[in-house]
Structure formats: structure tokens, C-alpha cells
Length: 365
Image (cartoon, rainbow, N blue to C red; front, side, top):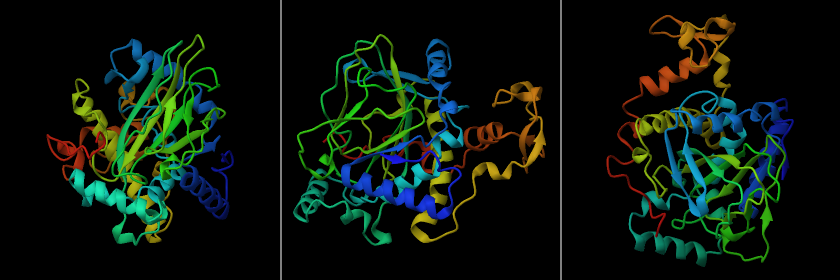
């Protein structure tokens, strides 16, 4: 656990100390809890908002997971696409520093990836084999997926599992933001420490941090959703990151009407920020300003009643001027126009991951 409640107001030196401590624990244990990184009052409404989505028509897709968990792909709209929730710089720094295993890109067959994995085992099962590799040999991480995992009341526990197998450690991360206050009784995630480096400590740790915390774990680490013995559902927001290839056992394009458009908009937005953080962390570029820094003008969004932020002409908000239309837009409308309505056709998600038949890595091997 790393105390992060003071992250937003911390000095550059203190932020570096927090980031180093968090990365050290992630590398050592296979998971880390960033305690109170996000404001509790911003997290509080999200569980009710998700339940509202389930009852409405905006749901992008709803799938059933192990032991009756429900997976909801999220629409590209506020609050789910806001920077503070999906593009926190400390979280993205962990992604950049940890996802360095490039074997998914350089080894395209079962045999090649298995051989690379055996070489890693023979070399001492060190995360440093990837995180300390020369920059040119490291993977460049990319956004994978975003969804909410809902565990209904009185749900049985999952079996322990790894979300990915090959290519192994340091190739995929899962970021979990609890929307429900977690307790040992309502189905928190249970981790087996250091299984990402093939150790078997014979113990399980339940992650039950206070509201506003963020849980990060290597997808190669053994974990499970525990039983929900309570009378209420529990929900967590989940974001995954991979090394530039599709590492999941499902395809978002199969998730229902416009599911791929919503998924791709998230990918464009988050990867845009991720590249800036990567340049700062790996290549010494200046730490990027918050995306909201460009919204300096106070006024009402030009979208009026159609404002994506839900405010429209009702109140003054921070605005930026669209260089093409000349209109003053809030950040919610700006993001929608930039990442959803007019995507960059050169982006890898424009035609799906690796085209119509995505390369799925060897996640199910």
C-alpha cells in the first residue's frame, strides 16, 4: 500500500518518491494499492451512475464472466472518460514503467513465445529483465479495454487464475478503481503475492482499500474475485493495458451497436496522454501539463442543451476554442469531437486491433 492522498498537491520531488515506491512494490509483489489517489467525493456517485446505465439504453455491451460476474463496456461519455478517472499521471507512469515485455510483438508463434518465457525462467525470473532493458527493446504500452465488473450479491468465488499467460510478466496491467466500498465480505480481489515471478507463498491478500484508492496488478499474477456474501452488488471500474497488441480473449467489436466506436474513442484519448507520459518517463521530456490546462476561458459551452458534460447553458465552465469551428467548447464536448466523431485514421484502432481479424496474442494458450 502506498499513501497517495496528497498526490495532487505534492511537489515534483514528492511525486517522484511516491512513484518510485509504488513501482517498487508493483515489481516486487505483482500488485500495488495507491491509497486514496482519487478524491472520494468524485468516486462516490459512480456506482449509482453505473446502476443507472444498466437500466437504460446507453449500455454498450453486457457480458457474463466467471461465476456470474457481469462485465459492462462503458460508453465514451462523462464521467467515464474524464481525465481524473482514466488518465491519471501516476497510474500511467506505472503502466509505462512496468509494461516493457516486448515478446508479444517479436514472438508471433506459440513456440517462439514459449522459448522466450523459458529463457526468462532460466535467467532468474526477474522483472528487471524487461524493465531494465535498453529503451529500444522495451514495449510501448497501449490502452486495452475499459469496463465495469459487477459482482451480484451472494455470488460464489472465482478460481484463482491469471488474466494472461504468455508472454508472461511485464506484458499487461489491470487497473481497478473500486466503485463500491470493499470489505472482506463483498467480493474483493484476492492476490497471491509474487506469483508473477512464479513464487508460491501459500497466502492470499484481500485488497479492501478505502474509497478513492486504485489497485494495479500484473495480469500474469494469480488472483481471483472472492465470494460476495453481502446482500448488495459490488462494482469496480477496470482498465487494461497491453504492449501494443490485443491480449484479451474477447473482441470489443462484438459487443453490440457502436461498441467498437466507444472502445476506440477511449483508446485514442488514453493513448494520446500515455504517449506524453512515456516521453517524460523514458526519454526525459518535460512532464506534460494536464489536458485541462488548455481550458482557460470561462463561459457556457457552445453545445447548449446538447453539451456532453450535462451542463450546457446552465452554468459557466472552463472552455477552449475549437480551431476548426471557432466555437468555445467544454472538455467533455472537446473530447467527444476529437476522439469519437473525428478520429485520426492513422491510429491503430481505426480499423480494429490488427485489422478485422485481430492478433489476440497468446493470452489463451
